[in-house]
Image (cartoon, rainbow, N blue to C red; front, side, top):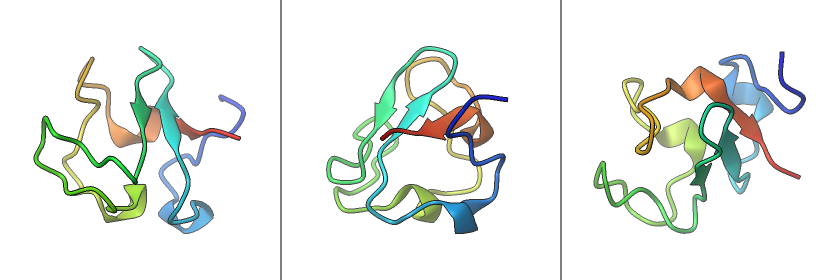
Length: 68
């Protein structure tokens, strides 16, 4: 398991946390949102839709790990 991985447990992720895809290293920054999926800036990772996937490689949310 990746260091920083949340294993699908959203309660372990701070609303301000930036996360990185463990497959392609694409970053989800809540300050920026996700223009591909029309997620507004300011949306925490934990508030993303359950079916949200990496906009770069289509990896599921569980493949993301907390940066920092």
